[in-house]
Length: 205
Ligand SMILES: [Zn+2]
Image (cartoon, rainbow, N blue to C red; front, side, top):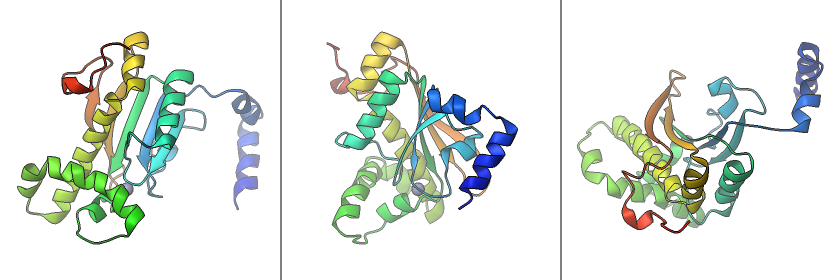
């Protein structure tokens, strides 16, 4: 483990480093990213410990019955008071590719991946116009990110924060494994419900 060497190096650069960080965290961002080992939030955004609150799962999904995700969202929005929530997918996502096959991955993974199949079904016409398989998967990565951002906007956690705090901004990004570049796909500003079907909008928060 490189842990001791790292801790020593950090102390040499800044003797107060751990002292300061251990007292509080005031991150500006909540990051909802893919579990893929090649997409670490801090490294690819050039940020340090203390700057991003992180939740990761396979294919960066926002699922309304996921207690883990909702707890992270609630804590980040209502206690840490983050100003930005980022859903970051990545091209070449194994979860997205798996969902595009008809392969049985057994019960648990099938259940998880079905959420991506639902996104596929929603945009099937658009996706089938793309003949190249890799390009089609990349398009689904982008559409999946957009859908997850919209799912965030559908939660009462976000809608209440918009109403009373005028934050956070919701961002949908896709990271390129091949070039390290993050592409912005889709944003929703606080209170903007243009893309949100009215049935999802709470009127008595
Ligand atoms: Zn992935």
